Length: 463
Image 1: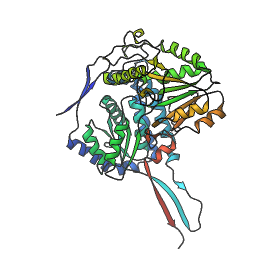
Image 2 (image 1 turned 120 degrees about the vertical axis):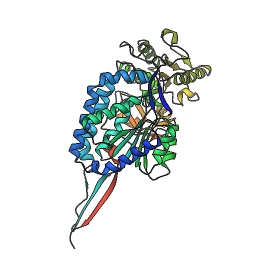
Image 3 (image 1 turned 180 degrees about the vertical axis):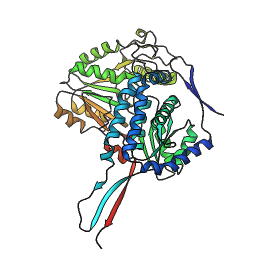
Image 4 (image 1 turned 45 degrees about the horizontal axis):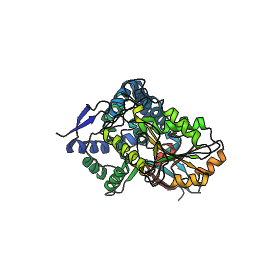
């Protein structure tokens, strides 16, 4: 039986081994989901909400243990991993549960004599959630909870790097008393996932991952008329205007660039600073970066852990080295971070200046602890450079003038526009991207629209 192995970035040991699901097991899961979906759909919304809340509370209660597992599986420092559960995951779940009654309510139409007319949101059926390793609970909860609240069943296939996350969800839903078959998980190969996407018993796919993965999902989904939500990559920019609070901007942009070792689809990967503030900004950016501690993520004092695997770190190092040969200047000496080691996933954060858009480092997603910083002369140049990308997930403007921020962000090709913050998801707002950052939407009331279909009721009451 083929085995899935999770290699820990902490020490390169095999942390988890799981057998892949067999063809028979996959078929049974799809069939179970289809068989129980109608009963689940008809369960009162209040009862669905109670079960979902219990499951999330179970995860919160286990957050410390789960946090340690996450650190071993993907390398984030243990001082941060539990808060993925107690913070963002719980917040998003609670919000989507609380708005379900309103978001899923019948849409009333203006009165028409002799008729009763309304539009109802109907569950799609079975939702396949394909989740990544970098924020394994945050990314998956965006789809799992609203899918269940809308009356769908869910099958979760999590990244092979974080398989225990799927098992933790299953434990939580079982403890909450969710009916059997409503939520299931599978450890499956890419080939088997493609077959599941194309299977007639799959009614929607929620995928978070790479652009290449998005194309693969889209290709598999093209064999039937189902929807696919695709949250893909990013090369997210920040623009620091001349009137920005530099101390605030630096503190948050350093965090946005290097938190989670830069492994965030909405992390900051390029920064444009008004030329009048450039030197001051860069000096402060360097100072804060030097305060990071690169070390074993199980050490409570560690603030930046290893990247998920050596190959990922080598890719980022390659981008940096190529940019330097093209004239970029690296401002951080990796030797100042004693645990930085070539040929390992432990990589020091890096700041590059003298960069331009002919360099891969300013065009290609890095997904690692590196950021390029460029001076700009005005808003017009900043907007042009920010839009010069194949991606469009988030963008941030740092200014004390909200009118200017709105005027600038209105011209940006992006799914989310921030002022004076970055790298954050507000569950009340639609999470979406354009260009190679994908399509579809999660969170907010709009997120429910993608997990339901509209059904019109046109009832003639007088004959």
